[in-house]
Image (cartoon, rainbow, N blue to C red):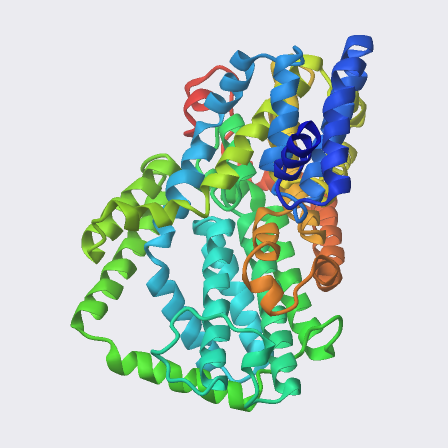
Length: 528
């Protein structure tokens, strides 16, 4: 009976995760208190490595559970305190509100976004131009929305296309299987080559879209969760954040666009696959079918969503309220004018973001350990020992390398917290802090496209229902991201060295941005 119960407990622990992974987490939990009792500093670093391991192994088990267990144990054995964790969460409440309300708000604008992307894919014949359109539109949307939300919409579009194809391949009409995501045995009426070409086509589009979210996400304070953390620490509003990032983000954006065209033209690493003619016909027929059955109520809903999207852009650009509260206004307006009034219908909108919101709170617990144990102090002191441009470059490289293997939100929040502490301690000037904040933001956002670990949007794509349908594995994502990783990282590095200090000075001279004086109203309110 004891053995049976122990076996059942072990099977329940972390569910379907591999046995070796479960044993690794158990081993971590067993050794941490022992090491902490001997050497707290070493125990802190081991905890960070263990947490990064759970992020890297996200496909084996969502990091909230194993990472959360490590964080709970850290609090229990005294590596940090619940009060400090709560303080870190309160410091970053805007980020949490962004994830809770903004991502849910965009869910109610999905019909408009789905229609837009369907028109793109059916009207544009050239694969290169289509790839460019997906990359640029995702960049634009991510600059004003949230990269996670944008990729969620693109996944919905791709799953929709795949299911439409499946319906016709199965000999069914468009309305018969609205949500059927079939597998190979349902495709008897179409060739294996056609199916593989369609999968390759969708894979390349999804990768271009994912990179697009990174290109746009780095530009504004709402593009990625860590951007908002950095903006809050630096007391920057929406416009100032975008202007300060521009010396790095604008050259990187154009480099990304050139890379998009180049990989499609050369047809390397899985790019260049074209949409089979038969599949294009199916999707075009479906689009016409949807247009015909659209009634006045549907059109009124689309018009309402378009007007709400305009308000969203204006609200964010003018910084009328905190990002999360603007997201809440989107939920209220979109549900009111689109007829969504049942509680269970509202609940679906929050499903995408809440697991990541919970994971973010676990991040803050690990950040609290880093602060309590002063783990990053030697690293920060070493990087701060460099001066001028070299200091900016070292921060960019340090953030970039860590973001490739870990999560960029975690890395960005840790580094900006430590650099803000250095500013408060008088180790750096306010102007140098502003430059370092740009370096940290671009360092966490650009090289992190290398792996799905680095960007939440990439991880979301990899763990979605779409990935197995189009045969998008971890290894294939890393390989397809490689050209973008090399180009974006190097162009970002070059811009940090050659353009950032001089162009920032030029922005000061043109009075597009102004110097923040520590302790002043500008410093505390975020206005200038």
